[in-house]
Image 1 (cartoon, rainbow, N blue to C red):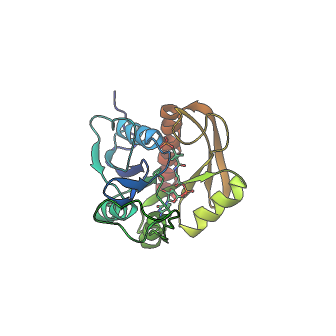
Image 2: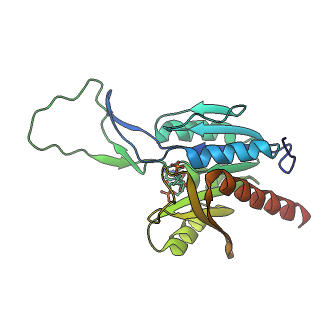
Image 3: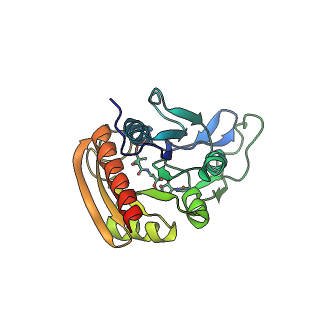
Length: 223
Ligand code: PMT
């Protein structure tokens, strides 16, 4: 049965990997399966929230009952997030957004010609940073996928992107991060480590994460 810790809260969750096209049949993407973000959307729904899931490419079906918006590129994800951001109370950014996209997107399939081909890339807009700079009371939860200096890089992202919490996963470890069914995360706030959630199913990680978020909101109300 649904519980009510997040009743009345509007939650945006981003999930999956963005797809950055080179031409109509080729693209750059990453190993995100959508599992982590979909589990968070489901957990927030089960806690009574009104959830909008904004999803890039994923390998599983989105949770039933959750309003899902499918997007392809980082630019489309940015647009969808900006459209819903003003009404949101909580935003959780579990998506693996491409940092770079091809400068040119060919309208027709690229032909095989030279022996070597150089593809020029340009930076995408940082969605989390953009909403971090615009936020008016929204509770912002970022993710940090790291392979080294996890705490330092995660804290750096938390400050730079104006997050209330950042969820770090060391994606070089076994059973952690991209595509697998389990995860291990460290949750940080501006003061440092809040909690570590040990190896477990992404569904359980998601529930515990959203309980931390709900507790932070209750605390904020009391202050
Ligand atoms: O989908 P799964 O297979 O279950 O895998 C889960 C996951 C590993 C993708 C997930 O747990 C995770 O770590 N997601 C964030 C991946 C990522 O892109 O991390 P990052 O450290 O590069 O980015 C930091 C934060 O900035 C993220 O919240 C990201 O959504 C955001 N970002 C990044 C670039 C960009 N242009 N815009 C963004 O908003």
